[in-house]
Length: 406
Image (cartoon, rainbow, N blue to C red; front, top):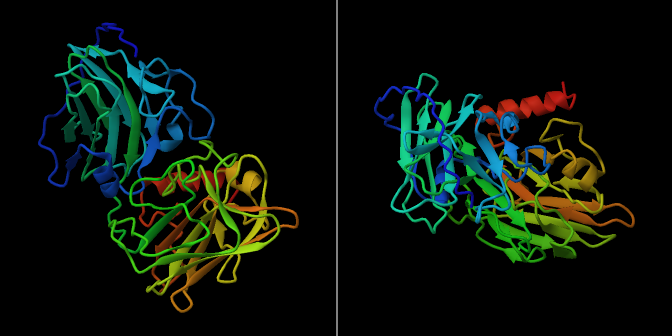
């Protein structure tokens, strides 16, 4: 780890010391934070939003598409002895008094959850994360633990939009951060939300995901992402499916909306030639949104996907639906996936079919089944499909516009 003690003489910014909002909450474990901050996105300082590798040096606006602006002196570094997600971490040598202070400005409205992990601290000193609104009002703060051997997580959710975050390492003899989480509290999303990571050869996805290793078998009692409780829904596969790990995908697919890594790092691979299907049974609601992620880095598998006999209604980025869908050319290259709106179960069942091109194979990395209101078409304002209207929808619209979608 970098143990530099560069002392910078800067003026401290005055902050209005008002009491935290009543709806604010502090967390010292990642699992509870992710349950409260649905759709939170990870900045691990190893990959940029484009999927390219992050290079050491000033962070600046490299994560601007996520609404994050890092003031000068915030650096990506590869000199840490043990970052949470190697190889890179987050360093700042700015000193206020005797504290090393990290900071990031949030430029998009709707962010109400933020958290981070220590790389190392010198016991018994601690770090303090503070979330502020645009007027400098303290929305909430949280203190890390004092164990220098543990990469402690600490974060907050707030009742108002966060405009700025500071992390002050008190009298740091060693200091560094990694894995910055940013999201919203997901208020209002109450429907059943089942997220499935197919294949576990390259890791399991946390935060109430269903991680299925036996991709050719049957799994009962899939859990709801919102509550973590088992449901009546089952996964039942037909066809020669296998857990696809080697050569599938590592970290190139961006984390967007509900989709986080390592959900796309492996998948259910379909042998060359045949048609395979996945049945989701035990659904009790009248209408669902179905999302299918198919991406691969080695071969451009060309598959035709259908849900209950229909082609997809749209893509996540709002681009035209490609049939057949190229796992590399349409999935990985664009960071995109297929979406079906207002799917009505037949006898409590939704059937996803993958038809491979002649001489080609197939892959499905991840699935999402979200209960929706059948009274009308899905609300396109919820562009990213995370079940709530938030600042990530603004980013989704930006992506769609850049792709030429009207």
